[in-house]
Amino acid sequence: MATPITYDLIIVGGGISGPADAYTICRYLRGIGRVALIEKEGGPAQVNSRHEANSQTLHFGEIETNYPLAKALQVQYAANLVAGYLEHHPDRGIFVRRHKMVIAVGKDEYVRLARRFAEFREQYPDIRFLGRQEIAEIEPRVMEGRDPDEPIAALYSPDGFIVNYGALAASFIDDARQASGVTFDTYFRTKVESIMRERGGFTIQTDRETFRARAVVVTAGGHSLLFAKAMGHEMHYELLPVAGSFYRTTIRDCLAGKVYTMQMEGIPFAATHGDPEVTNPNETRFGPTAKMLPLLERHRYDTVIDFLRSIVWNPIGMLTFFRILFTRHLFWFALRNILLDLPVLGKWMFLRDVRKIVPLMRYRDLTRARGVGGIRPQLVDTRTGAMVMGEGKYVHDGIIFSVTPSPGASVCLRAVEDDAKLLVAYLGYTFDAEAFRRDHARVHPDASVATAASAIV
Image (cartoon, rainbow, N blue to C red; front, top):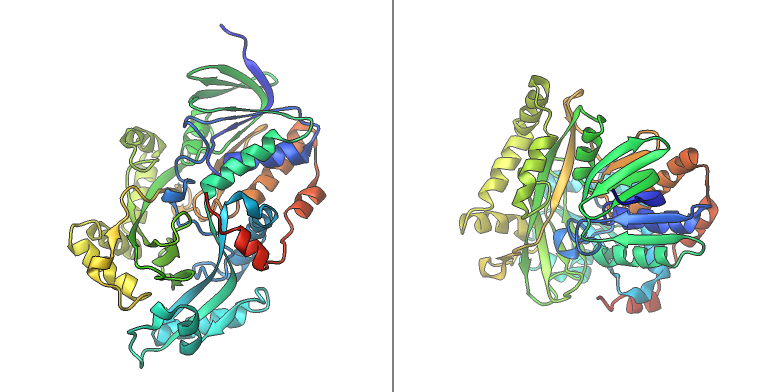
């Protein structure tokens, strides 16, 4: 048997979370010497974090109307860390700065949005409550052809980012490699087959090499839960994979920024929104539609087996799974999204959603964005019979398992800040929290930053 390659820390998974871990630990965990990242794909961010697989949004919480204020403020802190990193590196072609808004259409939504503005304005001083004329000035296509008697308002923020999270992951890895006094290695096209706890650390067996590490962080999306279960942890959790799909239009200047619609009551998934595409300014996406698929990775049908391994195969686990699927709101939501995939009918149905944002959108102006969209690994706790909202992070004496559904990319640096503090307690190094927060402090947005940020890779 070959001698294992030894590290202080090994990170399993190369989506946005793994490179964020590598960057933060290499640069701010004082005393650590050897770190490695292992990823089964040929490069970073090839699954849910590539720019085709998500809405490319940096979520701050103010226009995401499914977030109450307490949750929004947690997301705001986390997103500001990512925004600070982006603003300190405007020349890397990772983002475009654009405004964003959520629109309320109809009397009921108007009242709900007005209440949200009153509640949020103190914590988000840059937001504005817009009427018809102001919306028309900022997003003319949102108002063109709209019923003049229909109540409409918008909650608007100038502080918006469209982010290429694949490019951000690559940037994190480049910065980790340049960290002083730390050896950082990446092993791409290397599939982890098992993680075993052994005296003094862990053995990681891959299809190419054997590794040893004092500590391990697993940031492999839904597969993180499978690794945890293989080690006897988190046996009461299962996964409900939710796939997001998109339509696109190439109408020039369709939307100047991101435009969201109000969240549907009782549904934890994002309502339809329109997003200018980060790599093609002449394309605007609308979505997501959402459907449950028995896959852990989109368009990769061999992961059906992995999904089946995630289910709790006992009466309680099965009952929990089907109880959630057949709750009134979620059942009709899921059925409607199945119909949205039908030829012709599906597009006509989705056009109604899009016309809430762009009233004059025509059937022929929309095409399905083939190959676009990812999988959200939604955790379900069979003990409580409920979905776990937000990140699932589980710590077991030197190993951390992270399952990061939306908005995982937006909160990646805050999540890694937590990881670093947990590793300090186990490994005995020092986390330089002051330097971390200083280096990710926001830069006041100005014209020069916005201009430099417009060159997208």
